[in-house]
Image (cartoon, protein in one colour):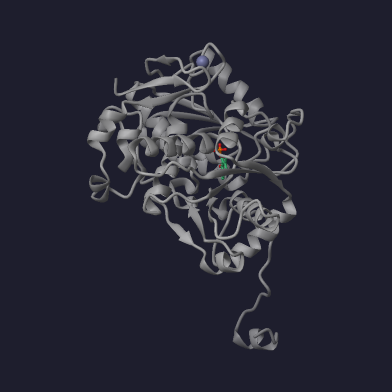
Amino acid sequence: MIFQLTCTRCGTSLPFRIRDIRCVCGGTLAVEYDMERVRRRLTQDRLRGRAASMWRYRELLPVRHDKHIVSLGEGWTPLVRLEAAAKSLSLGGLWIKRDEQNPTGSFKARGFSAAVSVAQEHGIRRVAVNSNGNAASALAAYAARAGMEAFVFVPRDCPRPIVEECLLYGARTVYVDGLIHDAGRIVGEGEAEQLWHHVGTLQEPGRAEGKKTMGLELAEQLSWQLPDVIVYPTGGGSGVIGMWRAFAQLRELGWVGERLPRFVSVQEAGCQPIVDAMSGRPHTAKGDSAPTGMRVPNPPDLELVVSVLRASGGTAIAVTGDEIGQARKAMGAQGISSSPEGAATWAAMIRLTADGWIRKREKVVLFNTCHAMKYTAGETEPVAVVRNYAEWAGLGLD
Ligand SMILES: *Cc1c(COP(=O)(O)O)cnc(C)c1O
Ligand SMILES: [Zn+2]
């Protein structure tokens, strides 16, 4: 066994497969590796000489043969330290993981590089996904790179630049009159008809594994000293699930200490199923918020996300659209462009430091998961329009 599937709920192990990754008990099946083999092949010394890509951790990714890897240069994104903000908030360190600097402008590239590679290894030629946008354009790009046909289904309010991106990569792009789970039903029914392979969140084993590399990278970039708190904008939760597995695997290798970071899942008020589940409120699948990567009213395995948050000693928090707007400005004033999702992590961090949940001298990592440009609708105007210097000078704005 190089890798197999193991149920995250009941622990049953099964041979690796790419479809039906739900166990008979209802739990999600996750990839488990022969850690002795990993230990022999992956050393910190060897890592130093490897390419600056998420495939530097290839022993911990579920692809057997290098020739099946579908890569566009994803991963190994900058981890930028925000010294001044850390100081004014009395933190021991504050970093932002700039995952918008991935191919297709979002961290979804990680998941789809892995999922499309796995699909390639299993001879799949047609792939489809339901998405609020970023998963669609990432699938479109990686499918094009692999020579596969891609079908993407997005809600009608998906940001236009993302739709155009999907079309540029040649994906069959369809608006769905509904939310992401309505789109998911269409993709699921198409898969049942054997039209395509469904690469939606937690529908196959590759995406969560690709997302896992965020955790591996973060650990390596911090010289294997994990932070105290990770603040992550959460939709379906594959990033939370993936990073938690990354840390568990690093702990098994003995590369990080026993204590793992506390995860904070950030959502937007109006679509906060994880926040509700954490506080025991009944779940109502509402999607009354902006169309961001966090707007997932029905996460495919809510119970698994909640169990990770609990196991880590973490929490979930909903921030308002206003707080996100203020956070974007605060980050912009530090030279950091942020997507609404990335800004949500800043807003949550501000609230949690103010109420003491994040304590003084703790080390905190925020995630900017997508490029700001993807959501700019051309609504803001510059200060003036001029034809020459005299007109500028006449404005008296200098
Ligand atoms: C998909 C997405 C998220 C949510 O990620 P999950 O790991 O699925 O919870 C957050 N931010 C952006 C920009 C996204 O595209
Ligand atoms: Zn099970």
